[in-house]
Length: 290
Image 1 (cartoon, rainbow, N blue to C red):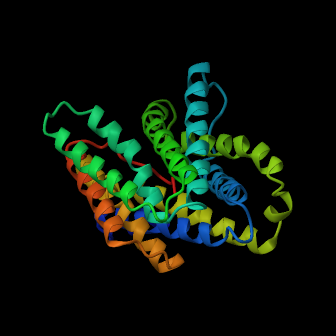
Image 2 (cartoon, rainbow, N blue to C red):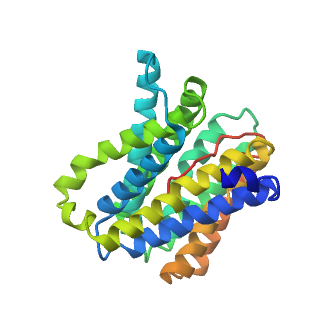
């Protein structure tokens, strides 16, 4: 409600930028907590707390839903859970900015595939250069970290497609709230197998996990929802392309992760590719992958 009132005073561009900053700050706090709890514990708490808040706000109507509607929201929830779990696994192994840069290849590829403009091949080239530069300057990379980031990118692309399908079948944030419940339930067995039940009940971990849920899910989604009421989709897509750069900045400010000049150039290449590829499309959109 507060975000809706603030939309009268805050330009939509600043709402989107606030959402981006909130997501990456949440990611930085999550990684900083990995010494106290595993990535699986942190991502479970994030999804569980955000699901709780969203369900309380949305109060989704569940009666009368068709089988198709449940299948769509189920797929949406699975993609949300895989996206968040895999990117947190990547955060545990490689720097924040590099992980998000690699992850961004997923929605960027989706944006290019959804375009019929020949000049988008140029943006594919920029993205490829960025990824290759990360491979050349691989001092901070691990194979597992890169693979987890790529998995997160693929899940992000699926999330985007299923988000559109869910939005057409579930009103307001009902679909997102149910998808968050499904994602948290999906991660519960992993939490138990990981032996993280005790860590998940630690008061400090619980408090920070709740804060991460607000920063990484509730706040950015609310900002984006309000901003999109008056912001052109193309502009929104360009703004979201700043995610890799914002992640690199958050990694430096929160975690003191310093990227090399070559890694910064790689991040810049992916940002440029994303801006170019999304300048006529609204494909890159997310209320909380990181």
